[in-house]
Length: 215
Image (cartoon, rainbow, N blue to C red):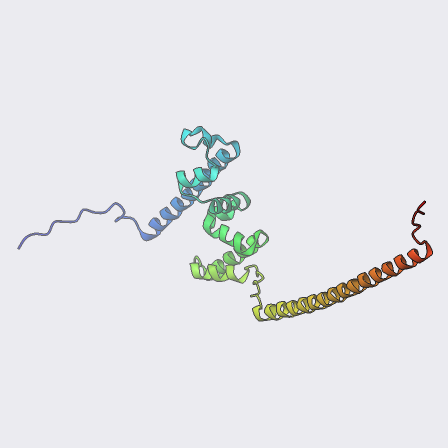
């Protein structure tokens, strides 16, 4: 029977779980600090326009440069910069994604309140809160957005139909009046012609034509 090769001890085998978790937490905080500095550098490039010193992006917008060079979209960038700028302490503790989400869904005025409740819940349970529990707290303070009412197509159709019928009725009335006016005009033309003819007859009788006398 072949002898199995002995497995070499792993890098972290001799470290307790508490020590490992502590190390991970420190690295996690460190990564957030580096992320904060990364956004500070990017914001500097945006404000100064120095990103254009890269010849490839000389004629590009910052947002094109940002997404192409670092695969960060404008919306995410703006939210993350705001989180690191307005709420640096919370962002380093809970991560830019979490704080940005609270800011976006609940509004900047409620960030302190949401974070405070998360911290109180964690203290009462004496353990870090699960993601689901944090999510439930966020949803609790979520700003209510007015839902867009669906158009009442039937009512709109009835209004449009009624307006159309009113327009048709007004048009029929207008056409009728135009016809009546045209008829009156024709009658007046006939009357005017008759009056003119009579006037000419009277004028001839009043002022008969004088024929020159023959010698």
